[in-house]
Image 1 (cartoon, rainbow, N blue to C red):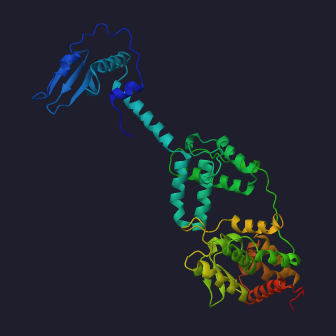
Image 2 (image 1 turned 180 degrees about the horizontal axis):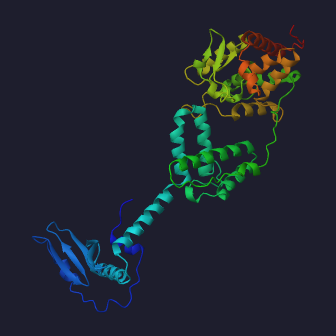
Image 3 (image 1 turned 30 degrees about the vertical axis):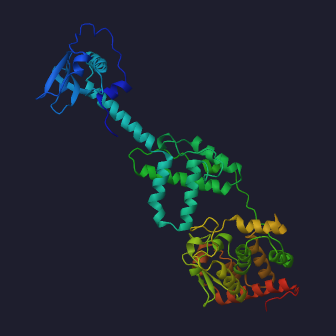
Length: 443
């Protein structure tokens, strides 16, 4: 913060002047000052009451005032002339004499005000938005690209009241100084998010709001209280809902509708690959061509893109059936020159949106009956009904055992069994498309 001149301090913090100026005689006048030329050596032009104009050969002139306090003589510089006119300098001099008369050292008085203003400026600069950006910049290099996007979206929702400029705005805390941040501010943001039914996401907002507060507290000797304390316990409980999914017996009609669906070829292939790989939509739509090993017939999904990435230290390897390889080759003819398998319409590094496949399925006539994630449910139901080992099915779905001890010892990927399962599943899809209603059970 740039130090202010004494004149600026007095202007912002006026001192009342009463009954002490009548005896002060003034020797200077504006006309005489205007005619002055730079002196050959430093000189003083006194005005009275301790006020004088200090003039230099360089042409710089400053208003100064001498005063006596606590038995010693001192002086302060009010500011430059002609930026500060004679009349203004006299008003400032009168205010300084008033301070001295009250036993206040003008220098100490001004220093205390400047220190207060500097602290207030720092207070206002430490807004939630500024600290959220600082927290993100400090931690983002260690995060995956997907996690960076997720956290950035959460921090933007907190700071701006929306995740993108084209979204409706709701309550936000970006402009609130960290030391003024209260639970009521955070609750207003949460109420807006909860109102749209995003209960799990609201908990993420609480988590990262707390992390920003912790980042702020780590850099100060005067930490603030956590404004998120207790908020999660007062939030409505999210009711776990299964993704809409049809029964395996309804797949022939679904596949027939997919063949004539009104969508881009890449979207149709994306839905087909969801079926053939049993991947989650996020795991699939952010796929990159280097992840596909056509020779080994496997798709290696990085651990940081998996739902359970915090507990998966290795990538998820997906066996590719003959049909999956054929579908990927068809897709490669469309997007093979790009690193992303499913590039978004916005260009750059963007992938297709979460709603792309869902909207295609809705237009097929399956709104409320089927989702992209629901294809995993169809696969699981068919595989269990066909007699496949549950452990193999769960591994194919990249489900992590909830029992941490058991999961630590059960590290086998059951590759050969999964290769057999995924090929049988792809063959079953072909049979449905041909209209073959024969049910094949695993020996």
